[in-house]
Length: 556
Image 1 (tube, rainbow, N blue to C red):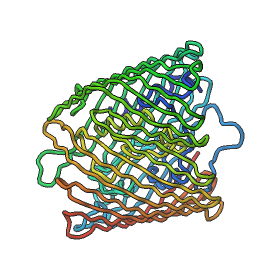
Image 2 (image 1 turned 180 degrees about the horizontal axis):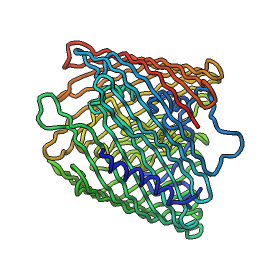
Image 3 (image 1 turned 180 degrees about the vertical axis):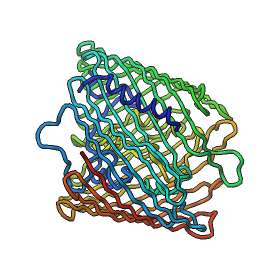
Image 4 (image 1 turned 135 degrees about the horizontal axis):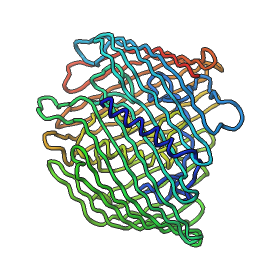
């Protein structure tokens, strides 16, 4: 992304949060703590991030969680007592990375040494008029083999402001990160080593909205949402093809929404009428596209733990490209919501939307006090930028800046940072499932995580091509507090992708081992070793990569 464009975007994020002025506002919709999000009649039950996930994901890059206090000590650096209304936590990180196969190739292996400097700033507000957080951690990398210097951006932010008490609110959120262009990586492993494979993603959203309560009879919400999305990287081609499957994409989306929901007088029954319309402008198949959903939803609580769901309505969607897609017709769904405990929820639906029938699942359930199980399934239409924008609308961010579901608190990786499958620019039907289980003990955290994704192209920008691909991933992570200031962690992972008409079949498995320690007050260090082994139908051998990463970060 060009420097001037980045300057406008980042300035806009900061200006928006500043303009919102201080606010710990809560809108009057008791089960919807932000602007209306499509498909969320049941509201958000935000719960803590999956135990063990926050400290051992690779979203932090430098061996530390993105934008947060590292878990080397098993505690945060916060002072005892109530949190301050405003806080700014600057830090600076230095990473030294050495690898024996920077491009992950079978032949012509090239070693590289990458030096990364990463200043970071974490800003938080908890006041009478603003509540929110912004984390920004750019990456300035120097590659010794080529002499190239590269600047990438990572940020996450979410803010809710009260502009007029109990009436007018402003929701701001954004996320920027890196993902693989060609795919074949496990989580975020080694994305820094192959500079030609990086894709920069940016998603920003601003939504002012009005709320009005009609006593205990009903509550209404009327709002507008502006979304900006950008996916940028080098053009990518299939073997032997002259048409790229990925080009830079930039999109602006304008959404108007209105809903009215029944109040306390209806007892166990909740009725809601909603209309959401979006028009797009920008690059590719979304230029001139639109989508409209209008529906009536109902929730009836049989007991405190069991509720039935039903929906009926109409949709109108249009997308351009080589094969323009128009979808008009009825939408409907039926389902059940289970809440077996205060921090557990399961929502299962089956119905028709986007012109086809499918089911969806969102579940996060505690089994006892040490074990948490979560699972999701969704079947959606969209481009990578569009899907990321939709996901951002319903996401929250954990204490480390990583995206989590606003509904269940489970981690959200795709499509913010999916690395196993190739990044495409076409409109796709995407079926995505995740499942995991985590156990937390006084000194140990063990997490088993798996995911599956199936993408089918529907239409592409003229001059480009789309292709079908699917893949699955499974990983096991173990973290242990070795001493009060020293943590160890290890993980094993395996992934497999299939694309019969394009890239064939490939697989990758990997291992990582690491230590992180508080070296002095506010100074943290980590040492990691990563091993990756990749193979595909197009190569006669396997690409082996060994990487060692030494990282330091100082908080001020």
